[in-house]
Length: 196
Image (cartoon, rainbow, N blue to C red; front, top):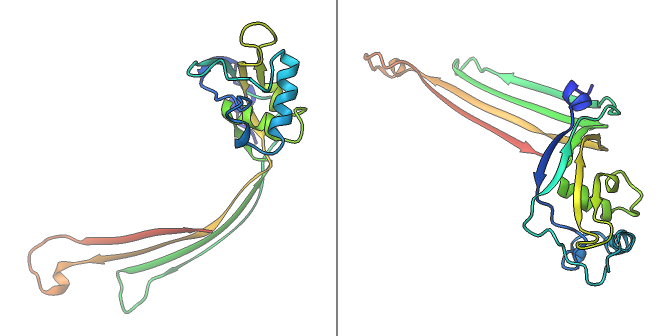
């Protein structure tokens, strides 16, 4: 379930940089929808899409960060299993391997202002939740430029991960090699992961 901060965090102000995806120099970096969506947004704000350059280059843009009371609970399908081997012929050797496969649906995530601006114009239309979180200057000097944003945690499609963790550990006692001095025990360990 969403935690209290994700649900009810009070609005607080922040200042962050955003590279405007609608700048004429950034139109080619998005999806094929970006140019048409930027044109729609910039025309509505009174700017010319053919010549628009980000008026906020190098300037922190003010925004708000808050909780989101409409968040839904996450759900997950997970499969995990593991094996630990301690062979009798090497009593201080331990080998373990663990497999995991996790699919988290309706995951809670907080997008950066840059992600909000990019997703707003890279989706099929500007009629989406990302565009409502980005505010643009309407008319006047700097028309079309981003002048504000609102960051809230949202439920996203999913997070998935799958892989194998493994470890090999061995404890070595110098006394096993005939050394009479009390040098303690030396522990050797290798730990790894293969992310599929």
